[in-house]
Length: 356
Ligand SMILES: *Cc1c(COP(=O)(O)O)cnc(C)c1O
Picture 1: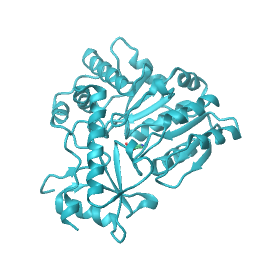
Picture 2 (picture 1 turned 180 degrees about the vertical axis):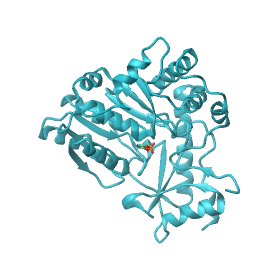
Picture 3 (picture 1 turned 90 degrees about the horizontal axis):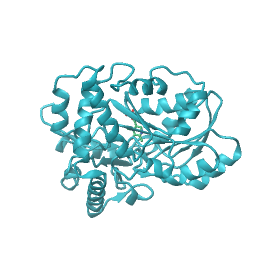
């Protein structure tokens, strides 16, 4: 690579120098007071972001590891789960639940549509159901689902609600306890502007109770092991954590929280509106339901007769700006860009005007 490129894909997002510097400092030994304080502070900051007093567990893995931990710890083979699927990450939850031999009731939506809680309610009424697995921000379409409404119908049916907040936590308002979310999962590399490799999972009392009886096999992602290590006088992880990444995440969270959660969310909303206005000013259309909710990712419809993949390739080749092309059925038809947590001027599309 002969010149720096700007990553404006939904993730990973640009990483501020303070985070890189923290990751370059000597590692602290992972069993003892230094790491204990680090892990405690990171966990407390994450609780503010999730808006929860529940336990938050940290795993060395990408976001998908956090999703897998939820499926493995909550359910037993044969348990029925309802999975609304409206994009690439909805499909991931379906595949993950099937890999653990769950009885998966898929609610299939056209990509770009928002999940309707009434559909979830109907699917729950068909048969006794243990859980609902849903995305908050479906990154592949930019659509933010109303997980508060989904949690309401899940609770009424006695099902746990598991929310994939990997691309939304920190970018879009999220109220874990207020909305009654049993398990929420996020990752380091999206709205928080840390580097990839860490997943975090918020676990409610009801989720802990389900984990007591769940029979699915688990070892590395066993929540009980994670909690037992965290509850030592100096909090730890059961297995060697990616210490440098935790040091980086600590710096990223401090930067994020400088303006408070509210301030950071306002910044995301402002940047997201600016991107959307800019896209419209170029004569392009936004993609997907409720674009006003989507402060994390902006999905743009490729104009008629223009190949979205080619547009994205050209932005990178000619301008060093990396955007994400459409996935699955949206290949060549759209592209997405993210507003990251700590990078204040990260969302512009300098390539589009000149390349027309
Ligand atoms: C990025 C993302 C994930 C996790 O992907 P990893 O590559 O495993 O980190 C999961 N769900 C959503 C909605 C995402 O945007």
